[in-house]
Length: 246
Image (cartoon, rainbow, N blue to C red):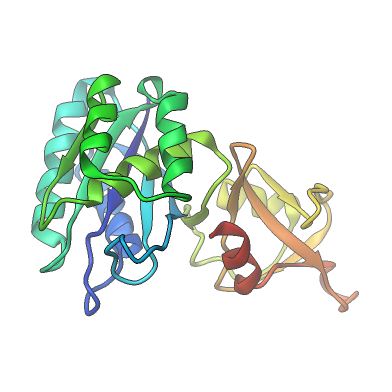
């Protein structure tokens, strides 16, 4: 069964970011034999003077494949990891939910967290109402707001950019669209306008490939290149991805 793990506010200005902690946690869960990591996404939340955050106010969501009988083990492992690894001064929050537990109310919490200032009591009230695990672990524990938002946004499937997929950071070179989809386990490769690329078309990939979530599909966006020799497409630059996934 699919489980969503949302984490937020695990860092300080000197430490590695929440995305790094998410990748570390996912790897350790696999190594411990608790769950299989499917992907990790980054979700940008509201930046506002009344919201304390480290740099960008983004949270992360890990999508895992888990035997429901191991849910308690998963919660314990994640809690201990964040208590141990969260940076001094952080306000870490942890949210864990099965796909079956997430509904429109949780998705709307995530969408609202991108628009207005929310608070801890509301986050806990919503999580308790829908029987979703939510816990603040360090500092002021306001990370629960973003952790719950990350789970809702990822489940809704139209927000965020992908931080981790198998071989994502190791993939560099020229591939057919079909090869790239299989290697990275992305659902589709499209232009900015949403037109899908033919499987035989060639694409140049460098070390900053960042698929995004579109229509609940992991989507790699590409653009035509002026080089009509070895490859026809290249993935769009990181500036474009950042501008469309914030």
